[in-house]
Length: 384
Image (cartoon, rainbow, N blue to C red):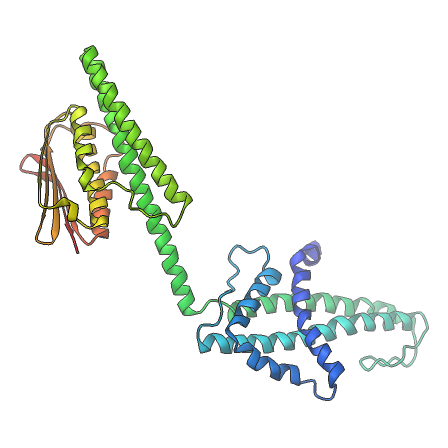
C-alpha cells in the first residue's frame, strides 16, 4: 500500500502533471475564440513544429518538468537539424496536445463524479452529469466515491510515465547526435589517457632521478658528490613541478593549448638529468629536430623521457646510447643500454606500454625488448 502511494510524495509526479496541462491553455484560449472548431490548435501545431528552435524549447521543457532529477534524461535540447527531427517534433506536439485533452477530462470529471456520488449517498440527486445518471439517491453510493479519485490518481501517474517515455522517443537524440556525443566522449577518454601518461612520464622521471641520486649520495659518502646530487634532485624537482602545474592547468582549462609542452629541442635537459644521476649517456642527434611537427616532437620528448627513466629505474648507472634522427619523412628514436640482471622496482611494464600507446596514436611503431645483449627502445614516428 505504501509503495502504491509513493508517487504522491515525489515532486516529479506534479511537474509531469503540470507539463501535461500546459497545452490545455492554448486550446482553452482558442475555444473562447471559436468553440465550433476545436481542431484548429492541432492544425496550427504542424507548421510550428517545423521550426528548428521549437525542438530545443520542447526538449528543455521536457527535461525540466519530466525528468528533473535524471542525470541522463535521454531527451535532446538541440534544434532540429534534419527533416526527421522536424517531423518527430510535429508528432510530439500533436501527441502532447492529445494527452493534454485526456488529462483535462480526467482531472476535471473525476472529482465531479466523486462529489456527485457523495451527494447521492447523502440523499441528494445530482443534476446535469452527462457521465453518471443517478435517479434515486442511496447510501450505498458512498462505497463508490473513492473509485473516480483512484482512477484519477492512476491516470495522472500513468500518463506522466507515458509522456516521459514518448519524450525520450520523439525528442531523443538522433543518430547523428548520438554519434557526435560518442565522439565527444571518446575525445574526453583520450584526453584523460594522455594526461595520465603526462603525469606518469614527468612525475615518474623526477621521482626516479631523485631516488637514484639519493641512493648514490648515501653510498658515496662524499660531501662534494652529495652536493651535486642534491642540486640535481632540486633541478629535477623544479622541472617536475612545472610539468605538474601545466597538466593541472590543462585539467582546469579544457581549451588551453598544449603548445607549452616540452619538445625534442629541449632533449638536452633529459640527458643532463640522466647524467647527473650517474648514467653515462652517449647522444647522437642528426637531422633538423626543430622542423619536427609539434605533436610528434612533444610525444617524442615524452617517449625519450620514459625510455631514460626506465634505464635509471631498472638498470641503474649503466651507460646508455641515445640516437635521434630526422630523415625521409620520419623520426627515429633509439635508446639502448646493457641488459643487467633484473632490478626490482615499482611500475614495471606501465612505461613501456605508454611508449607503445604514444607511438600508435601518431601512426608509428615501437619496439621494446632485448637486442644483442642490450635493452632497446626503438620508435619510428611519421612526420606527416
